[in-house]
Amino acid sequence: MPLVTLQNAHLAFGHVPLLEDVNLIIEAHERVCLIGRNGTGKSTLLNVLNGQQTLDSGTLRIDAGIKVAKLAQEVPEAATATLYDTVAMGLGDLSGLLSLYHHLSQEVSSGDAQTLEALSKVQAEIDRIGAWDASQRVDATLSRLNLPADSLVHECSGGIRRRAMLGQALVGEPDLLLLDEPTNHLDIDSITALESALLTYSGAVLFVTHDRTFIDDLATCIIELDRGTLNSYPGTHAEYVKAKNVELRAEEEGNRKFDQQLAEEEVWIRTGIKARRTRNEGRVRRLEAMRLERKARIERQGSVKLGVNSSADSGKIVIEADNVSFSYGDQPILRAFSTTILRGDRVGVIGPNGSGKSTVLKLLLAELEPSGGSVRQGTKLEIAYFDQERIQLQPERTVRDNVADGTDQIEVGGRSRHVIGYLRDFLFSPERVNSPVKTLSGGERNRLLLAKLFAKPANLLVLDEPTNDLDVETLELLEELLSSFDGTLLLVSHDRAFLDQTVTSTLVLEGDGRIGEYVGGYSDWKRHADAAHTKEPAPKPKKSTESRKPQKAARSPGRQGGLSGKEKRELDALPGRIEELEDKQATLTEETATADFYQRDREHVEAALKLLADVTKELDQAYQRWAELEEVSR
Image (cartoon, one colour):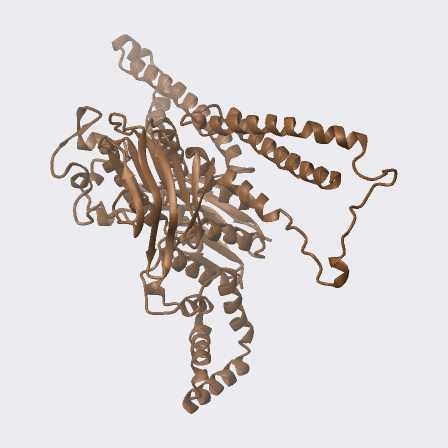
């Protein structure tokens, strides 16, 4: 039986229709992904289902007893409450009692008589109303999301606060969980933990996201809100894209034929006296209906037109770090880190929230002084830096003034452009360009910062979390732009698909000041990390006296000791085979590290990366077999 049914829903803000005769059914245990361009009304639809927004017309039916909870898109303002308090708020009236019990439990170690008495009263009240199960749910939710219960919200990062808000939504165990951009501000470990939690969640989930990997890992169905209508697509995000492209081509062809017929009818109605005398009234009425239909047509929102204003090439060496160390107090960010970034390199930086990714960028850009070692920048560098806090935008000034600084013309790619025309490329209407930045949505602010950066010449792009709040279509356009950029790229991102499509090597902050360097994007590093994690450790010797006696290697039944003839031939052949595999690995590694590798055909890229993984695996097995045979031959 459906949990939620939406029938013939209509909703408009002013003259803009957000929902036009929308129908939606959500069944128990479904995990439905809602996608659509920025500004199409996805958050509004979630608000309708949550009861925060009323329809102009139509019906919303939610079965009696069905609980609905929603995670907001924006991270809340910092507060003085603890993370325990924040999560417990998801239990409504019980939250105050449970928070009081938790805090008194922390204070009771002092042995104060009044605290003990207060704790006893709170325990009795929890017993009376049977709320211990709710208390356990708060503790379990904090543990599942790896949240430090007693940390103050205002001292936590945006990512941790967002996890706390997610815990607040989950703790009440709603039948329908509504998530608006749940992966924003979360690091990769938190995203994968969220995926695991939702995969085992017993309720239904409707979520809005731009994270394509998250969609493929989680969604049982994809629905798209496009110009007020809602359509459903089975399968993966890639399958949705194929189906949507077919629909758009058919729509364009239908519109072309309709517009051609309308033009012909307009010519006919304007012909001379003779034609007007003979025209039939039915044809006139059809023309009037066609005019109304054309006027009512809602055109698809245009795409962002991205382009980097490339400058002259930098020197061959872009950045060289030599034994760089840096720490905040007792927390090491880098320990003796060395790397060389060459012109054309595309380097991703990944790591948990708070591990120091932005600090690494600032050290490499010489915005911070290392406590040890040195950073040397190359020559002729023109840097465009996208900071995740968007501090380069001035919130009180208008959109146009942030880009053009009060003038009407800006220089882009060696030619003068009117600022309104340039901003139209980034989907800002002429009316919107005069709005103050503080009124913009998160996606609009990201587009504005990209517009500001791309107006200036650059041969080094430094992007710190550029994907938050961007819709998938704009993300894919940004991927294409970065793939064709002939300069150098430094990218911090938690978007796994975006990393795979844009970078050729990865710096991974592994904790305690260690940074690992790996060839390829996120998936390549993940395969390497998983292989290292699953590799069986060498067996430890037993501590008994028996284990100290020399042991003979086990022999196969027909063997007279030492190697068999076949094994001797295998051992003799292994050095040549290992050398052959090492040469092949080196060639493939060199190919995948080139600046244009990820610009090639996708099938070629995937085949080369798979071959590199297979060769590496075979080489490891050859080394292991060589060691085994050498041991037996002694």
